[in-house]
Image 1 (cartoon, protein in one colour):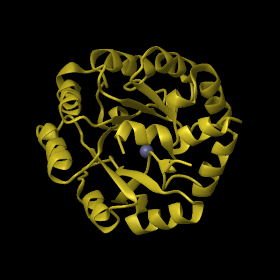
Image 2 (tube, helix red, strand yellow; image 1 turned 120 degrees about the vertical axis):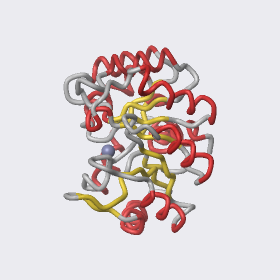
Image 3 (cartoon, protein in one colour; image 1 turned 90 degrees about the vertical axis):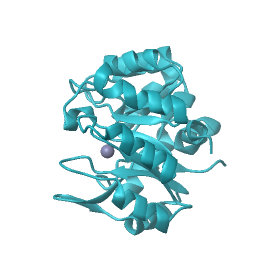
Image 4 (cartoon, rainbow, N blue to C red; image 1 turned 45 degrees about the vertical axis):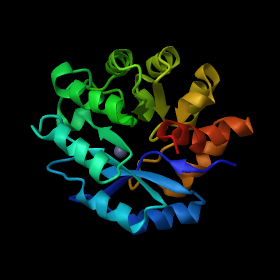
Length: 239
Ligand SMILES: [Zn+2]
């Protein structure tokens, strides 16, 4: 069995939501999960400091990603600091909350160029909202074929079919399962294969154990299951 890795969690303390590194590690311990990808809550003004501190506390359990608002002038510099100086492993973007199109060349291309240069994956909020609809992902997957790009929430609610089509078309585009019901996840596995589907929970906004247990039903194929709950993200992260 390869490592079990949860590819989507938030750490921090903002109005309405709070999760510390210790709280998340307790959840993954209870569920039997080895590691968790973590990034900040991205509402309002946010920094990566909380995630950096949690990573220092749990370096073997947490896999830190940087989050930035591309409207901030120093977004590219923050990404470089996170990756090069702090040892972060990836980047998280949320076009809808921060108000920009994912495929906006002026705002977002500089960040994807850093991902090409420093060789890290990117996860982007990808529910069926205007700013990060599946066609926005397709444009970026095509423009940056060497960047491993994950669509969080796999186009749920309205755009799952389109998300599956694009992830099938672009070798570097993957679907992340948080917030998506198991029927849609099963459909994705059947249509484009377990190697394109990556498990994440979006904690703390979930019943943690349930989100892990539901994945048992993603596919009857054991090796496909292991890829979805850890093998694929380990490959993208070059662990
Ligand atoms: Zn999230």
